[in-house]
Length: 260
Image (cartoon, one colour):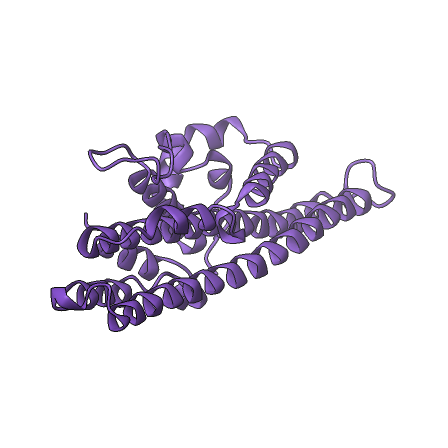
C-alpha cells in the first residue's frame, strides 16, 4: 500500500480529535511536485530559493504541530496513569478482602470500571506511539521525494534534527504502556475459563472503540517498519510483533465494553 493511502486510512481509524494533528502529506507532496516542475533555469535562482524556504517552513510548522500535540497527550497520560494507581489502591483499601468493610460486589463493580479505564488509556498510548512512527515516516518519505526530484540535500540534516524532537522520543510513553500491562496482570489475573475463550472474545471485543483503533495502529506500525527494498538508515527499525502482541490478552479478560 502506498504511504499516502496508509496515512489516510490511519487518520480515519484514529480518534476524531486527533485527525487534524497528522502530517499534511498530500499538501507537502503537491509542493514538492510544484518546485520540481519549475523550469531548469530557475534552479539556484532567488525564486527557487524562496520555494525551498517555503517548503522548509511548512516542514517546521508540521513538526511544531506534532510536538505540541504529543507533549500535551504525554502529560495527560502521566496524570491519568497516576490517578488509576491511586484508584486501585483506594478500592483495595476500602472494599478488598483485608479492608475494614470488605464487599465483593462493590469491589468487583469498581474494579471493572477501573479496568475499562486502563484499557482505554493503554489503547490511546499505543495510538500515540503510532502517531510518532507514522509522522516520522511521512517526513522521511517527503524529504526523500524532495531530494530526488530537485537534487537538493535537505533530508540528512532535517532528519537528524527530527530525531531530537519531542514527538519522536517515545521512551516515556512506551514505559507507561508496559506499566499498564503490568497493572492489569497484577490486579486482574486472567481466569482459566477466560483464557480458553480468548479467541471467541477477540471477535467480540476487537471491533470496538479504542481497542479496535489500537490494534489497527499496531498493525500499521508493523507494516511501515518492515524491511523492504527501500529500507535505509532513515527508516525506523522493524517491529517484530506476533499475533498475541497485536491483540494483547489482558484486553480480552473481560467482556467489559471498551468503546468510548
